[in-house]
Image 1: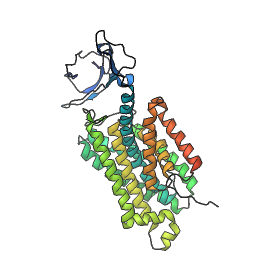
Image 2: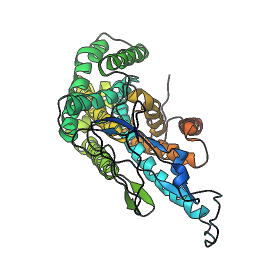
Image 3: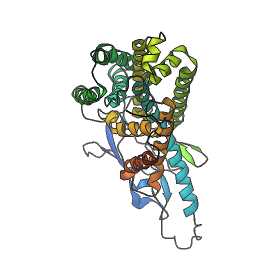
Image 4: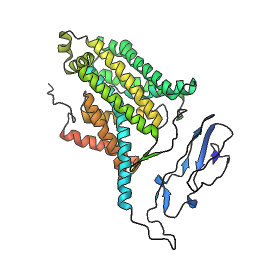
Length: 383
């Protein structure tokens, strides 16, 4: 184990249970390297990465995990019994693990995609700055967590509220003004690209270019459920994601505002003539979309780390989920996002992880060739 700048800290060996412990003098980033030559001849590190770079905070423990898997074509130890062929079971175990990870990623994408889809449905705006709403939520939570010393949970609650307020203010003082001036949707789409670039570089100026974790829930011992192994936070995050998506779905179907939002999405002029305040409905949608996007950013930051480009990194996947499910349909965004998340993770069974996003976009293109309106979208005549 060394410090971030390469100064040695300590070299230790694990016990019979595979655990080890190192006490450090001060908080900071460290580099932990596993000596692969000390592993059994039949085992190797999953993914081939034997280096971890944890961040240790004051009065907190940081857990480092190295997942070991059977070594493909490993030499048998002389005198040892012949190993059982586990290639099939290993494949299906990995497939189950990737399916779980795909659902986790798909639900995070779905949170962001649902807000984008609702905004498009009510305003016909393709908002390329929606990824920055995701980043905004993660950065606000990071500010209160690391900057002000609050826990992650209260910081997340504050960030969701601030994200909703940010969405409201955007429509109240910017997008709403453009609509009243009669700005076309194509012009507004181009403007959204400029807004995205402005916010991204503002985040870079204020936060910096480094990837930073929250002070809690960084590394947790995995929980094994059948063939799936995951940190406890992943199960909790998926429960939160599902709960929020269900609540939003019920609100769209059962509440007065939800029904009004669906009416505006179907026909704004007819909705206005029937007494619905279209501007008010759009403002509510922007507020909800900003809050949901902020929550997606916080959960993404807990899964990975917080950086100024995190929203941009998943923006293409968000658009893929929205388009695949059907533009303007909230439930279509959920279905499309889950398909994208699953395909991204499961595709790594056969292709390099670096190409997994390309495969998901290829599926998007193929589906849209046969069903341009998306899975849950409706055919519309134009002209």
